[in-house]
Length: 317
Image (cartoon, rainbow, N blue to C red; front, side, top):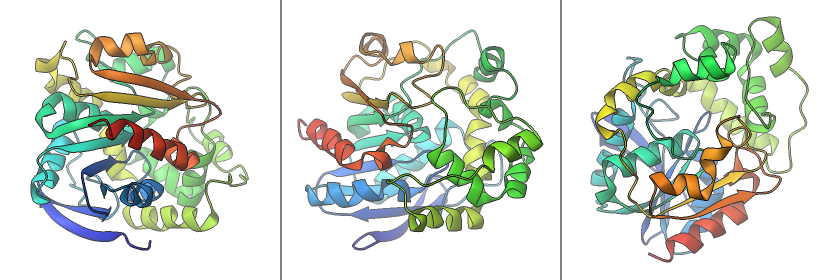
């Protein structure tokens, strides 16, 4: 895309690909699953035009960054460590951070572990979930939603990758990017999954065939394993973050979610996204925004509004 510079830096022992544009205060843009830097294309151009240096890494396991083979190399600590390495490599002391989906989870933990490196945070879709000292995450997901819940289905290395390959990477990405339910996502096994992901889908106005093809081409090269390994480390990250039980995220923050987002409509989750509840754990939280008629990929669905939210918040600092 025009004007976007692509570089690779060495961080935390691996190569991390960066897409960036602009000069000024740095905004670190952290993508989710199944994405890579490209999901921030609208933000990179807009924020650069507003006087920021927008930097969007491919997180480990994604895009043109390295994907370590060890499934256990995708904990919060690995990925936050990568980001600290990126900041050091680009000469950034403190930065603004925007995260979406898994990028939001990494953003919360970056602020939890290293608040000295973050000026302020805007997170999308996934609110802060304080560590439950009694229950491991997968135990909780299975108890609440059963074995067909997508997070449970992602656990066995290689299994869902094989199913996705049989269905077709194009169909899988098209479904996830455009047709997620406004509620828990279930991925049944066998023919039911093929039927679910194989339905004909008309692309929404915010995603063109050319843009979808860019995603598909990248994932045909990389596969899904790197991104899926984040889900496979939920319990290990839970064990390793025990020292932070009861800790607060002490960075100025803003949280944005769409009212059609599966996260917002998952039982037990919506309540944790209210301003009063979230502020218990993020004391410097300034605002919770619920966008009407917007789904999970809100930075792509409503880029102008998201860009304005980011700029309005960060210019305070």
